Image 1 (cartoon, rainbow, N blue to C red):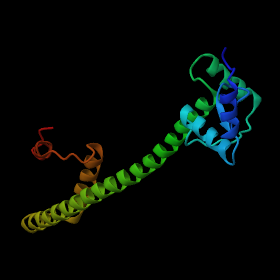
Image 2: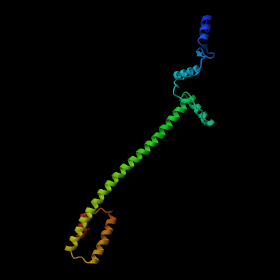
Image 3: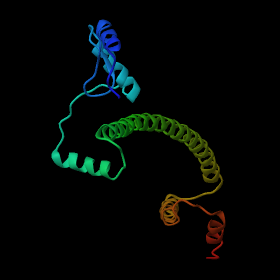
Image 4: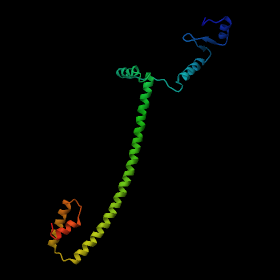
Length: 181
């Protein structure tokens, strides 16, 4: 029969400090600190070697919703559900930090690129302004234009640039001067 031991086996157990467990067919040592070792071995066997036990207070509705997911076999236990939820949330926080870092890095790179482009455009505008100034001085020196005609020309050019949004076309100016338009 199972569970019955002979007198010699029983005396060997009691002499060495071993007694049979009442709940399970396992053996537990009665000496100091042995129950702690037995629980540690059980945790290692069940995969809980590095887990910490703590209590959590949650709303009843939230707990019922969690139990529904457990019943649907999405997860196997409340512990697994809490671990998955915690991993997901910590991943979200980590990605948020990474997103903030990437946004700052990307922003500084874009700002540098825009600043370089702005500097290049400003240098090009300066060179064009110098060339335009030279052209204006040569034209004013070679042509005798009075101030009234110059003012009318200024207003006409201002209106034309507004109308064509700054896209000056030499052919249009030529046709206007030759009165072809």
